[in-house]
Length: 134
Image (tube, rainbow, N blue to C red):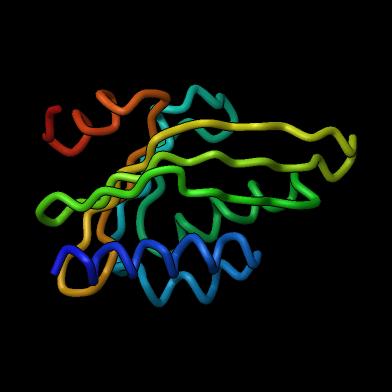
């Protein structure tokens, strides 16, 4: 089951990188909780709920960037959770400036759908968000 969960998460990243968030919605539970509070990005620091919340998040995020590139540096499955260490490089739509992000994202997968995602600057904080520890 955990390898299946990893593949679901990888497909979600592929959809995001391809700038096709609607394709990614098929992988998300209709009541998904998408928690952006752990990254310290004031404009996005909130919890998005359901498919409409995901659309709201992606509309704002994609509007800011000309290009988005994700690289999974490490992927680990634990029970119903997938923990991903992410290097992200985006180029600003208006400025053309390249911005690098490094963060950890946890996903909870249940019955083949992502039911929750939490993002954090550190691995311990990402694990803590889903009740896991080192």
